[in-house]
Length: 67
Image: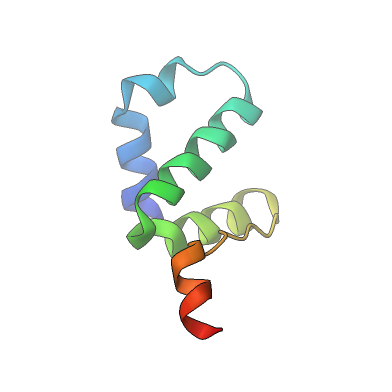
């Protein structure tokens, strides 16, 4: 999945136009918040690339269901 994610990012014109690593990381996190089904791949990408642990916040609706 990480390979597919990287391939998709490299084809994305907006991602390719970003100049700094911080901008790219922010873009990837935004994409992950929009497309929840790729969050595991994004977490793995950050872990493999920089050793960084990223956590996506759950939707408020999901949190309320458990209360």
